[in-house]
Structures are given as C-alpha cells and as structure tokens.
Image 1 (cartoon, helix red, strand yellow):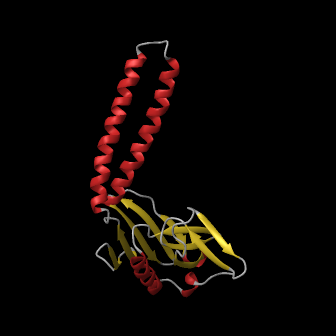
Image 2 (tube, helix red, strand yellow):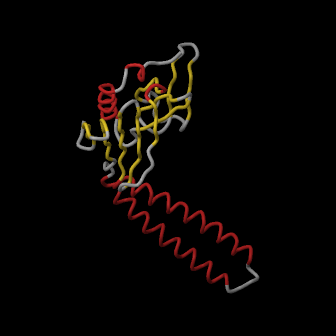
Length: 192
C-alpha cells in the first residue's frame, strides 16, 4: 500500500479514500502540451476572424468553426484529465448496508449509491487493457471477465460497475481487503 490510500472509520461509516496524485512528470508534460494546444487554438480562431471578414469564404468559415469546436472539446477533456490527476480522489463509504462510491474533485462529485444486498462478484479486474466497457462471459467455465476502467469491478442489479481507477493492482488488493472487513461475504461471491 502507498500513501495515496487511507482506510478509517468515520461518522459516515467505513471510508476508503484513493487519491489520484500519481501523475508526476506526466502532469508537467500535459501542461506543456496544453499550452501548445491552446496556442494552436488561438491561431485557429485568428484565422477564423481573418476569413470572417470575407463573406465569399463561407465553406472555410464553417470548416474552421467545426474544427474550433472539436479543438475546444479536446482541450476541455485534457484539462479534466489534468485536474483529476492532481486533485481527484475516489471516496468509498460503507455504512448500514449502503456503499457510496464518489469520484471527487475538490469536493465536487455525485456519489453512486449501491445497496449491499444487490452487490455480487466483487473482484479485481482480471483482463485490464482489452476493450473498454465490456463484459465477457466464458460459458464453458461460467466465469465472468471484466474489461474496462477501474481495477475493482462488481455486478449490481445485472450491470457491471467499476471503481479504483487511480490505483495499481497492489493497491486495489488492499482496497478489496479493507472492503472485505465490512461487507458481507455474499458481495464477493459469484452468482450463477
């Protein structure tokens, strides 16, 4: 376990906090990339303004406008990744038969609420890196394999849910061990 994970009893229940602050040099590279991306976006808008004075070039204006929108969306996504990497954390709170999982950035974030009785097959993701957001079932062995974001996955009312996206496998094992202390064994059993 590293210093990015804390597990403690609070007034709200058993709380596990996973900080995402493991981006180090990547944050610096992302900031440099964002400066370049922003400058290129500025140049794009400057071209848009220059062409805008000539009403004959409406096709170029529409093309530049579409490109500017795509450029802006890309910048927003990268800023979100940077902010998550620096300030983000996952907060898992377990209390009175309810599990709350919240992706939190400086106090902002809506928790996902799960009733313990409906949780099953909680385990570490066994197939990281294939396709995103997919569940594969091997019908010969009746084993479900999880694919996607988040090192810990579970079934809740027939749907796959994931969390622990800011940790490595060793940390995910620690989180799972901590959750086993407070959740019933049924949550970790495979329903067939």
